[in-house]
Amino acid sequence: MSIRGSKRKSPAGTARREPSARIAHRGLPAGFFLGACLLLVPGASAQRTPLKPGWNKFSPQDDISLGKRAATDAQKQLPLCNAPKVDAYLTQLGTRLVQKLPTGGVQYPFEFHCVNDKAINAFALPGGYVFINRGAIEAADNEAQLAGVMAHELSHVALRHGTNQATKAMLAQTGLGIFGAVFGDTTGGALLTELGSFTAGGVLLRYSRTAESQADVMGTQVLYDAGYDPRAMAQFFEKLETETKGKNPPEFFSDHPNPEHRVERVDEEVEKLGGAPPGAKRDSAEFEAIKREVLALPVVKKSMPGVAGPVAPPASPSRNFWEYQANSYTLKYPDNWKKYPDSDGGGVSFAPQGGFIDDGSGHSSLAYGLIIGVSQAKGNSNGGNTLSGATSQVIQDLQKSNPSMKITRQGEHLRVNGQPGLSTYLTNVSPAGGQETDWVITVLRPEGLVYFVCVAPQSAYDNYDKTFSSILDSVRFTR
Ligand SMILES: [Zn+2]
Image (cartoon, rainbow, N blue to C red; front, side, top):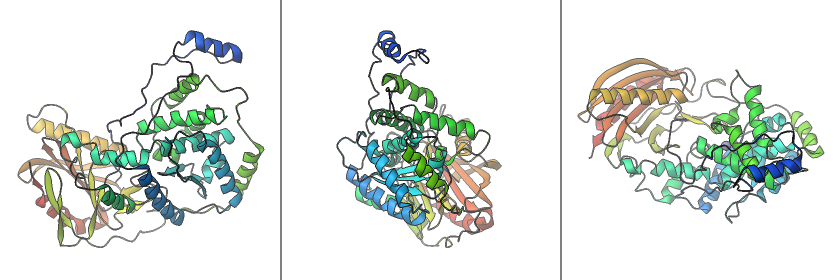
């Protein structure tokens, strides 16, 4: 059960999409192009899009300590290339880009690591710990494209998207009441521990499309300032998209969802910068040598959950319960489960140790446990239609991020703390292997549609059914 991809509010500081003011210039002499830009596009000359990190409850120092902890885990869990020359090359290239990265004066301890994974992907943890899969190096046609991927990752660091997401998870719903105070009593330090105990990628690496677009724009600026062809990053993404059409999308796009009009937005920025600078760097002999070395590295087989054999199931849910107090409700959950803030947009999950399964590339999905979220119900509040309409919307959103999810039973009425609710059962592919059952309960409250998603593999569902019912029975709406 994955909860990626649902619609969320945009963060503050979002890059404004400007009306496209493009002129046909390809094929014109460089001098003419510059003149045309200045004459025909008033205001577009050298007005690069200003970008700043969004609202963040964490300090840059928190980014560094969180990132460092997650990087230590990542280095233990991921197969590294163990190729000193490759790491040295990535560090050298990364350092050149970092010199042009606007970090607002913060000195991040940048590190660059090659991961022995053929999947085309790369990720950067808060604080500047950058991991680049061999697959990304192998797929790049030239140094500028690899620099483009790295500039994009470094922009996530400079814009502090990881902890911005975490902040949004804490605060996005404040106005709606329910989850604003879920985390309201949590001090930064406690939350840090909470996040740190989460697997490396879980909370910190799932970016919104807005964050992706910002990283594209800043990445383009960094490429330009470092003397590279600024179109290289967009060209790389375009190439990934066309080459893999009809096949599974490259992993890069699951960590970095494709924003709308990606290439057009980057082209716009390139024009604002005045086009590719003359003599812009595209390739180097060094890159070609490193790519040959990477291609010759031994291949490490990836262990994927559900493919590489059974993952040890978590311990059965305890019959002793802890109380959890949110702003507008309380509930009780097994005392051998933990509470996790959700990555995106506010919400909370409860899961046993091992309830979240990480596929080793930074995604974690819930295999055993409960997710609680709130979604803004549409329409008026005159009873049944709104509940069922809002429920369908939530189910559709879940299906968007879980394409194999299918409804098996729906429309049954029940009560949660005396309030009318709807029950829906679905099946989905379990990250633990085989099929899972998802039991979704929805209740309309003043703050929106509150949904509870109970998740367990089909084979183990009987062990969890009672626990889920007990949790729901314990819900008390407090206002
Ligand atoms: Zn990204």
